[in-house]
Amino acid sequence: MVKKCLVLILAVTLVVLSASGVFAAPKMKLRLGHVLDQKSTRHEAASKFAELVAKKTDGAIVIELFPSSQLGNERDMLEGLQMGTIDAVITGDIVSNFYAPLGLFSVPYMFNDLKHLRTVIYGEIGESIKAGLEKEGIVALEFMERGPREITSNKPVNKVEDIQGLKIRVPEIPVIVESWKAMGANPTPMAFGEVYTALQQKTIDAQENPFVDIASAKLEEVQKFIALSDHMFGYAMLSISPDVWKKLSDAEKSLFREAAREARDYQNGLLVKVDEELEKYFISKGITFTKPDKSGFIAKAKPVHEKYAQRLGQDLYDKIVAAGK
Image (tube, rainbow, N blue to C red; front, side, top):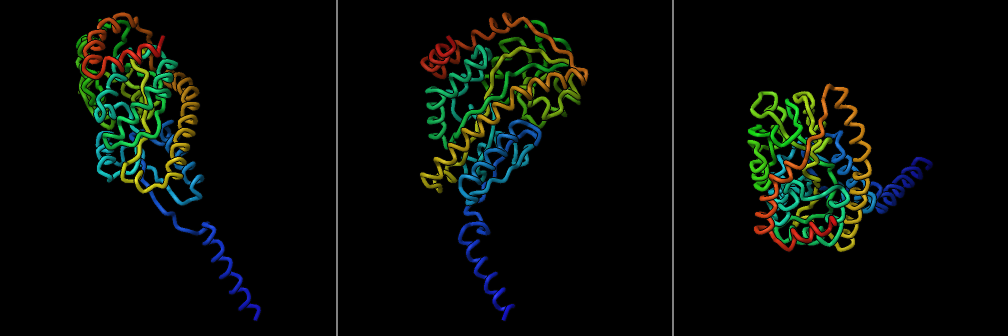
């Protein structure tokens, strides 16, 4: 009799737990990919976003993470997002290939400093960019900061003359390729996952990225110098597939955007401290830092500003410039 009672109690308990969602299978499982490693602030952002979505939906939506280019390079993942074969991504500037006006963000010295970038991406301009991306089949949830892009190389860079003819890897973004040509370098477009080997084999001599990306790919092992050129204050973008977005209720969409903002703030807070720690780490690994004269770089990039303002939107360009004054 006692045994039967215990069995009955256990059965009732399981029913209650199942109904409350404790043992319920998630309603939806999503895959989120990015190209950096698990130690990067980008992965921290992805982890925080997944944690928040699970919490805010009471476990109904689970996000699985795929770092280190497991789902492909950034272009592949964004194309997968559009086609519905990938659910969510965090990518860098390559997203501008899918919405042309965003290319203005990739023009060297477009932003004066981090404050200028924040004014743009977290204000009306940022919202208009998100709306434009959605029309192109990319639901942009939130911008995130990446820190300034710096030049790594095997020779010191103190002025623009030092990069003349330099074989430098750049993202596969036309405006960036053209900008480095204008500044006198020999840019080589290449997926980020290929950079370490290309530097090791001396196919290229240099590359440019924020500190966290440099460390993520262990580029300090194959480079000797970092020039603090601050030529671009970059961004990352957390995006979701339109196919997934359509399946979410209005309440769930609101929760996703809320989770994205919280993950953004968490990542941005980490970034400042991590950059300080990474500078010390690079020095400990034998990296020499230089602070180049930026005036020559800015002067050579000016014609690119004018060309792309006309091509991608003079009004948008003027608004970005005005936001920094």
